[in-house]
Structures are given as structure tokens and as C-alpha cells.
Length: 229
Image 1 (cartoon, rainbow, N blue to C red):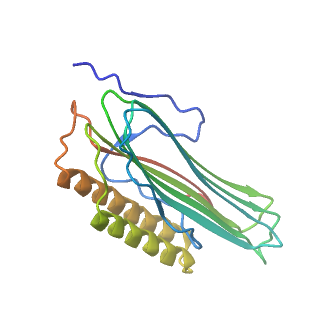
Image 2: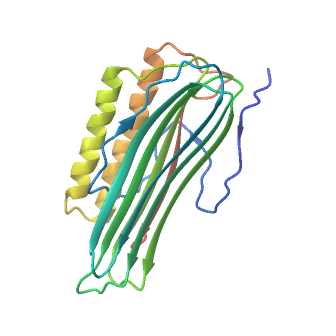
């Protein structure tokens, strides 16, 4: 049987296509101050179109030397016939000096669950870190998009939600630390891999088979940072 599911080409050089569930590449941005994790309840309505857009933006300058923010969102869409999901992180450092350098960190985690085959899927994940006349500044932007795509709708159970919340708390603790950027990237990347494992276990617990050889969990990741990684 032909699989009509589509992942449209990236519309921006920063975008990456969805990749199969597996080991994440090293490198990640950090989080220092975070908004509470948001979790939507799975829908029980008939198949429909789903749209999700999550983003995080920070801007540090000589008046606000440290600006940090993260988003950690869980969206459960249930059965859909098409989905358009976007996740973005943008960090800017501008006009600081080596003696009073800036630190700008933006970090966005987006978790999406959906069901229904065939599903027309357009997934976009972006990050951008920009230094604008900013000597010695640290500017980090990281976007992670996790898509759980199953033939039948599943609901993330309370134990899964607790595990995800625990990962979010640990992200916050790492970001508030004085850990060098390179080490933060490695540590947070490991937490992102942990999220992938949690979601993979959730699918297995729901006894939902993978369809047409496609993995039920895919990960979309993009990192950008100054100094370079």
C-alpha cells in the first residue's frame, strides 16, 4: 500500500527535515528562565487539520546583559488528516563589549502527537543565533521538535507527563547554572534524547504498531550558537 504522507521541503536554510528516531547529534542551547510546560488534552473529534506554532525569542544588549527564555509545549491532536507544525528559537546579542559581554539564550521544545494514515505532514523547525557588534558574547538558540505519529490516537499517560515535566525542570536547572556553553549544549542534548526515549516508551505502552515501516517517533533538531560549536 502506498504511503501518501508527505513532509514538505524546508522553506528556510535553517530548517531541517524530520529524521528517524535515534541518537541525537551533539550540541544544544541552554535554558535559564522558563515558562511552565503546556500540555493539551488529546482531541476526540473526527479527522481534521491541525496547526501548531511555538517560538521563543531573546534579545540581550548593553542595558540587559542576560536574557534567557524557554518554551516546553506538549500538543496532543488525536486523529488528523493533515498537520502543519512549526517550532522556532531565536537569540540575539547586540552592542555589548568584552568587558561587559552579553548572554542571550532561546530554547524551544515542541512535542506533538497525532494519528491517522495517510497524514499529510508539514513540519518546520528553526533556530537562529545572531551576534550584532557584540564582542565576547554568548548567543545560543536551540529548537527541538518531537512528532509522535501513530495509526490510532494515543494519550500521554500521567506517568509520561511527569517524566516530561522532570526533564523540563532539569533543563531549567542547567540553564541557570554557570556552565560553559559548550558543556550546556552537550548536557541538554542528552536530555533531549531522554525525551525521545520517554515518547518511544509511551508508544510501546499504548501497543500501537508502527505503520508501513515508519517510526512512530521522529525528532527534528536545529542548533545555532556563538561562539561557534
